[in-house]
Picture 1: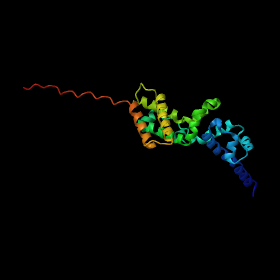
Picture 2: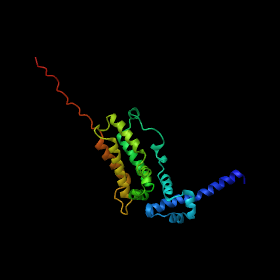
Picture 3: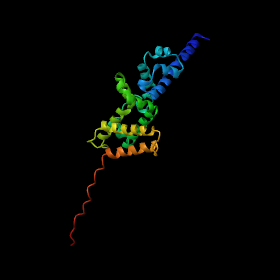
Picture 4: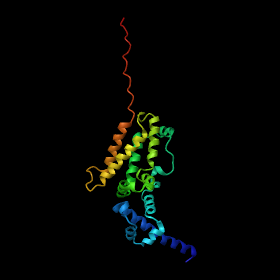
Length: 230
């Protein structure tokens, strides 16, 4: 075996504990909570020595940070690929419908939450104990695409598609709240009788009907001028 091949094999083997610890930590954090999860239990779940955990991650908080990066990797999101939000001209050129703008975000955010909603619930409930990680946790819970949605809504408002008196930031947070509530409802032991896709469809339709600029009323047709008979 060449030295290069031996080095590659050693690297692959050394990464196995790292991957097992990340998977185990995600499971234990979701099950026992951020405070209740112990490094000993995470190491036991991963099948490695606790010393290995500290050698690789140093602290439980560092391990939590890596878990959040792994579970809620925003690079998988179609809108998070580094492309800028569409300008007003792009919205007008592509004729992006308001329904499509809201629906794209709702579907992406729903999929984002679905990666590990049990962990999301723990993060929401216990984040007050981990102040130094609050910005990172909020970035994981609130899809980074939120800013992209806000930019699109602003462009749509400039194009006359959204009512001018409505704040796009508030609209984006309302969409996110509805999606989050649907994910929470679906995670309960007794799920709702409606499906997730149907829920998202109704949410999108409700939001769009509330924010879209109503069509301008056409002036009533005037009667033809009276022409007296001879």
